[in-house]
Image: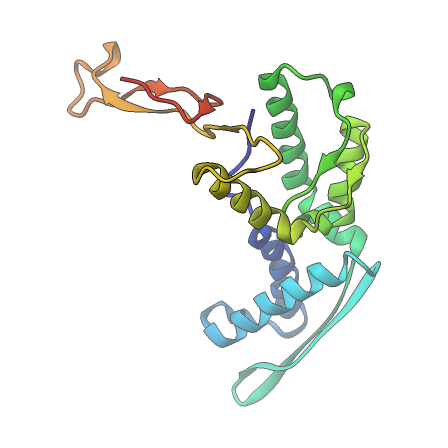
Length: 213
């Protein structure tokens, strides 16, 4: 089974830190550099680097000189961000992900106690709170043998090998992440200008490859 928020990614974590920087500039200098493309690009880079550093350190001193200028006066950024502060900012995003993980288990008819190990995929799983929440929710250890940044590539190469008929030691079972279907006229569409009822043909979590007519 699969479940998740396909619109959620590392940039969403970065955006939380970006807002911290913008709030600090507004409070200290009365400046909002949103219209300055170069300044925003610098702030986004700082946000990503700060996120990465907070996976190893409990606090990070963020400094950027000559970020922007107002009436010829240079504006500098200097703010301290703690891991606890960052965790409070991203906690709602992580809580929603835990709930989606529970949904995937329910769809697969698997109990949390049946999980042997948790395999992490993607750089954002290096965030300590991600790991602690998963271990707490499912009482299973984190599988450390595969680099989270390489896991996607390894999975894709296994899938490619299966599709080409190569001898693959492990059998990878894939399922549809979304229900696929067509737009039809439903009971509630008779008086509308555009029919907007979705009729699923291939339902979510159907084992792939699959064919429906």
